[in-house]
Structures are given as C-alpha cells and as structure tokens.
Length: 428
Image 1 (cartoon, rainbow, N blue to C red):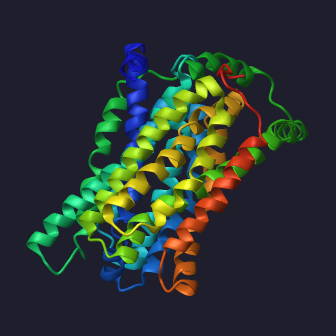
Image 2 (image 1 turned 180 degrees about the vertical axis):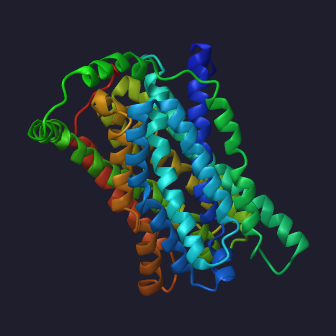
C-alpha cells in the first residue's frame, strides 16, 4: 500500500488525497445522523420512522447534485467545482445543527443531498483521471474507502460524544446532537485548502482545446441540436441504464447494511450508544480492509469477477452479523460483512469510470450512481416499517433478508454487464 502511494508523483498524491478527504468528510456528515436518530426524534417529538424518512430526502436529491455539479465540472473543470461543492455541503451541515423546527431540519437534509450528490462523481473523475492506469484498481478501492472512513469517524465521534454527554448529563444524548453537526462541518475547510493546491485533471485539460474548437465552429440550428441530442442518447443510453441499475443494486447493498445497523444493535440488543459505536467502528475497519483488498485483486482477476465473489461471500456472514447475542460477536460479524460489502464497493469507482464515455465522465458515473441512490432511497424507511409491522420492532430478520436478496442482485447484475479493466481514460 505504501509503495503504491509512493510511486505517485507529488501532484498525483495531492489530487488523490484531496479527493479522498472530500469523500470522507461528505460521508462523515451523512452518517452522523444515523448515529443519533433517537436523539433527533426526541428533540423534535417525532417517531424514529419519521426521522429515518429524512434519509430518503438526502438520497433522493443526490441525482440533482450529480447532474448540477457534473455539468459544471465538464464546463469549468474538476478542481474549482469540487472546491465549491465541498464548501456547500459543509455550510449546509453547519446549518443543520441550528435547525429550529422539524421542517427546517428536513430542508437542510434535502439541500445536503444535492451537495453530497455532486462530490463522488467529480471527485472520482479528478482522482482517477490524474492517476496512471497501472494500479488503478488499488486506488479505486482506497478512494471508495473514503466513504468508510467517514462512517468510521462518525461512529467514533458519536461514541466519544455519547460518553461525554452521559458523564455530564445522565438524562441522555438528546439535544447534544446539534454540536456534532456543527463541529462535523469544520474539517471540510481542510479539504478545500488541500484542493486549492491540486492541479487540474490532465484529461480535462487535454480536452479543453477540442471543446474550444467545437465552440468556434458554426452554431448548429435547432433541428441539428435535437438530432445531436438524440444521437448522444442513442450512443450512451443503454450503458447509462445498465450503470443505473447496477448502482441501484450496490446502493441497496451498502445502505441496507449500514444506515440502520447502529439503530439495530441498540434496539435489538439494548447496546449503549458508545458500545453500538464501537461495534460500528469494527465493522468499518473490515470495510476499509475489504475495499483495498478487493480493489487490488480486481487488477488480477477483473472487475466483474471480483465483485461477484465478494457479494456472494457476504451471504454466509448473515448469521453471525444479524443473530449474534454479544457485542463481541456482533462486531466480528460486522467486520466480516463489511469486508465483503465494501470489498465489492471498492471496485466501483474504477469500474464505473472505465465503463463511462470520456466526454461525459464527470456526469455519467456520478449521475448513474446517484440515480441508483434515488431508486434505493426508501430502503431504510422500508426496513424500519417492516421491522415495526411484522417483527415487533426487531430489525434482525429484515437486515438479514436484505443482505440475501441484494447480494444475489449485485452478483447477477454485475455478471450481466461488460468488463473494461485497464481501459484508457480519455476525453473523447
């Protein structure tokens, strides 16, 4: 791992580090809420199910952000748009901590979804376009684990803060969640500063002259523009639909095993906030290892084959992950489950970018990713509703069923698609 990173040039290391940090902080802000669902529910006097609904609005509006920031990144460059994007989600996260009513809270989570939706596509394009083809699978795995790092940091922050609050205020965690959101927004300033020292994507720079030549050409008439748009849709439409379905399967896989897991271990097994956070941290360590391991293995065995193997290996982990009765065994199950789930996910940044057309790389993978998120955005709501209606509030059967169904879906959809390992990333 150290050798792979050391082989990069200083500009490549800066670009990758900035994109990794941006994705980590984006995920950190998102996952903070999942560790204080109960506290937010008590503060605004709403049910747990209603609070989980706020995740839907965040996920549902991510495609709008992917499209908005992706278009801007194609026009103005990856670097400046990514800086603006990170500043936006940081400001919105800060504002969440001051939401006076439930309606305003929902509004901030929806706006955060727009900002969050833009980060992955633009950041992945900047990172992968700046790196050499060799070892791209390893760096894909490492980049995607920025998401896991954010989750891990959120778990640690919630756990430590829960201990602090429990010591000072035995009445509980309610109200103190606001400070988590306020403090969580501040590290994003570091990512913006680091990006200011990053070079623009060489791929985007190489295509700037071609775009300038096109702008200098005589303008197309209305009918010609319509014909051109239809040509683009015909050329890329089938690939885009496939990637969207693939990302629906993948986002169902990750959100179905992560978003309600801390709530699951607290409710089903009565674990305290610090203990539940510790279980989640162990799971995220497994996720981090899985992403790097499978990303690296995909260089040898191919993207599709490695994804299929990882997603199917998640199924035997279900009993230990969902039906253990001690914190230690739950943590072990979480480690093994996320080793496989995020192992498969670690290949996604490079797989999507290799399958995406050069002229729309800042838009194509990010928009497909976030539309997949939109299609799976009510996953957490459905899980909470099923647990309440059919299992007396127990999450274990619902979580276990999610892994089985979605793990098989990921393997099937991946197997039906193409392989593009090692494809050169270029503009046109």
